[in-house]
Image 1 (cartoon, rainbow, N blue to C red):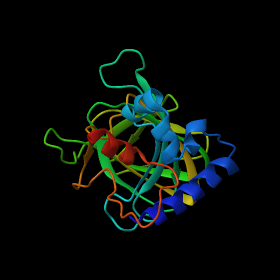
Image 2 (image 1 turned 180 degrees about the vertical axis):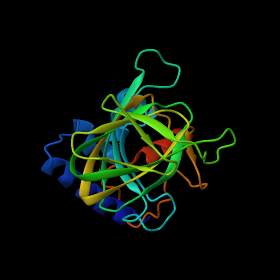
Image 3 (image 1 turned 90 degrees about the vertical axis):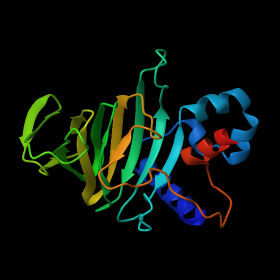
Image 4 (image 1 turned 120 degrees about the vertical axis):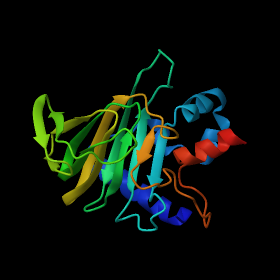
Length: 224
């Protein structure tokens, strides 16, 4: 993706969250210069992957395949101080997040407003394939069962619990969705298994200065 595209989607994401009266923490507006001058605090937040994430998963078609996220809070795997994470997402109308599961993370996905959030679900096999077995999940405590590849629709206010090894894909319909995620510690570098091999983070062509750094920019900073 071009940095100019990412900056455009960041502005749209900010406006969308604001329109739904979902207010982000102050570091959502930190510029690269702010991150550079804040020393230990910035390092602490980088290590935990806090902040913006815009990915098209190498599709080249962000508005069809991709996601905009903001990680509000997160711990580190193995650190007992904080064992949970929270994200907020803008899922565009008919924008799909491809089929994937997590090796370790358990998460609640919440429709916090907008259109409907549609999830397609499969159990996984021991070798990472799609199982032909019925899927059982809980939605706001209620037991739900669907056939393999079956859909569950979350309307505003509804949520679903996704356990490790449960393949899921989701998209919005009838308008963009403000989606929340509350989970155990999130490790996007190691804990995603896409059914079709895809890069989690987007390669960026720098055609203009970043509006705000992405989590993937933090990763490149830590690799220096």
